Length: 298
Image 1 (cartoon, one colour):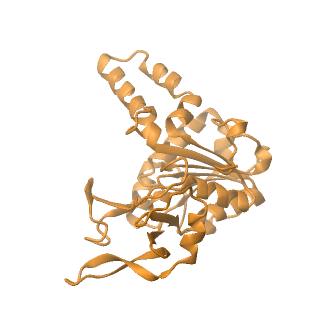
Image 2: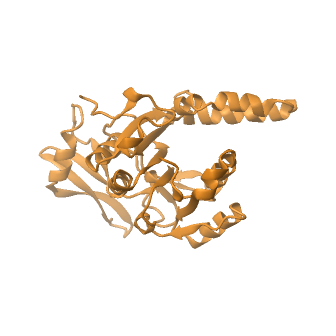
């Protein structure tokens, strides 16, 4: 990036602040980067802001409610399990086409899902990008947020890169992935509004398409396991295991498997990694030139 005097290090939805704390600790190997970096956290929860403050002693982050509020300038942006919590629309295939799924009141006064009887042109347009068949009753999901395009336009105009890590398929498809989790247990998404975490799988193809349309380059998505192995997680684990006891070595091996395991239910396979960047930067670390995004049917 030409080592700018100031660069924004931004995290979207930083949770407890653990990822940013780890990133800053690793960045000690490059003192000049740390000196130039200005930490920005996009977080709306006052309670989580307090936890982030505690996780980042000696750092004075700038908190923002929206990505748009981060000052202009080159940026490195992290988004780990952020996009899966943003609002989606769902469309259901009917006899006459696609219809938007709605939420209404049931006979008992509780919330229930229903379907708008009017055809939805957006659903039909989105479905044309998906492989056939589209059977009656199939569900199509669409991320409502403009954040991917906003990210891409910023990076193309001002420089930098964004690393997006989340769970979802590498290629788009049909399916209802909306789910609710409360106290680490799956629950009905409509049962207790505001009391459970709502998530849906991320459509990485749609993200990359929106980024390219806004002028940014897109690389991936890669499986998280492949990405971490390329960056040296195996060698890092081996180094950490030196001069440790058997219990500590076992814990490190378990952590490595949890993050980079490639079984069908492992995080390394379920989670994907997508990089959006200023096209002038070239291929980012962890990716190969041929992994620049292209349409699945291209």
